[in-house]
Image (cartoon, rainbow, N blue to C red; front, top):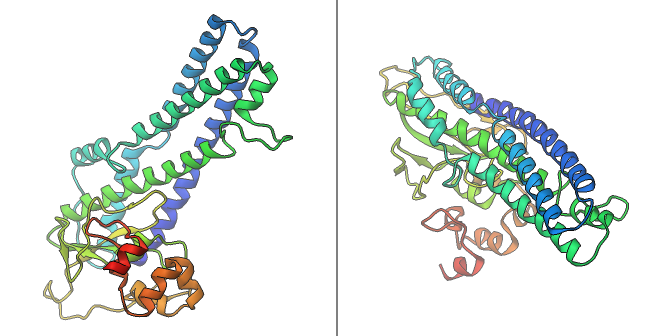
Amino acid sequence: MDFYLKHQVDLLRLTAGEQTKTLALLKQMQVELKAKLRNGLTDFSKARVNKVLKEATEIIDGYYAKTAGTLDSHALAQNEAKFTANTFAGIGLDASLPSEAALKALVSGSLIEGHISADYWAAQGNSLKFKYSGQVRQGIAQNETLQQIVRRVFGSKRLGTSGIGFPADTLRRNAFTLCHNSVMQTANDARMATFKANDDIVKGMRQLSTLDSHTSLVCVTYSGAEWNLEGVPINGNTLPFNSGCPRHWGCRSLIVPITLSYRELGIDVDKPKGTRASDLGQIPSDTTFDGFLKRHTAAYVDDLLGPGRAKLWRDGTITLSDLLGQTGRPLTLEQLKKK
C-alpha cells in the first residue's frame, strides 16, 4: 500500500507536467485564433467570414491533435507495469511483466467511460469550433464591430467578461481533467494487466480511496471493496467492479493487488500491520472509511456526505455501502430514505 500511495504522488506530478504542456498549446492556439479574427475578418462578406471560420477550424483541429499526442501512453504503460512488478519484489515475490503485445493492445484500447482519450480531445475541439463560429456569426448578425466580436469570443479582462472560455477558464479546466484521467486510466490498465500476468501470487484486487474531505461519494463507498481478478465481488463486497479506477472525472483512487499471504505461500509468517496516510496523519492501514469518518466531527461528515445522508449514517439507518445502487452510482436522499 505504501508503494502505491507514494507512486500515486509521482503520477500526479506527471499529470501536472502534462497539464503545463497542454496549457501552453491552448494559449498559443488562442493567440493564433485571435490574430486570424483580427487580420482575416477585414470585411463581413459571407465569403470572407466562411474563409476565416474554415481557417480557424483548421487551427483548432491542429492544436487539439497536438494535445492528444502529448502523453506517451505506451511509455507510461511500460513504466507502470515495471513499477507494479517491483512492488511484488519489494515483499519478496517474483513477478512477471505483461507481454509487449499486451501493453500495446492495452494502450490502443484504454477507455475513459467508454471512449479513448483522443475522442475526448476531438470532442473538446468540436465544442470550441461550434462556440467560436457561433459567436462570430452572432456578432456579425448584431452589427457589432470587429473589436466587439473579438471581445465576444475571447472575453475582456478590463470588462470582466470571459468570452467562450479560453485557457483561463473552461478550456483549461476541461483539458486539465482529461490530462488527469488519461494518465490515471492508462496507469490503472497497466497495473491490472500486471496483476493478471501474476495470478500465481495475486488473488484479487482492492480499491484504495484517498482518506480526506475531497473524496467523492462513489469512492467513499468503494473504499476497501475487493474483487477477484475477474472482477467478481469477494469478502462481503457487493459493488460491481465496472472498469475500476478512475471511477469518475478527477478520481484519485486506485486499485491495488491482494497477494497471497505468506502462509498461503507456505511461509510461516504473519502479515505485518502498517499505517497509511490520511488528513488525520498516519493511521492503521486497515482503517475503513467508516472508521475514518467516526474519528471526525459531525460538521466534517455533514460536509462530505451531505447533512441528510450523514444523519442517516449516524443514526445507523444506512451504511456507507448503501449510498450507491447496484450499478455503483450514488442514490438520491429520497431513494435512501425509501430504502
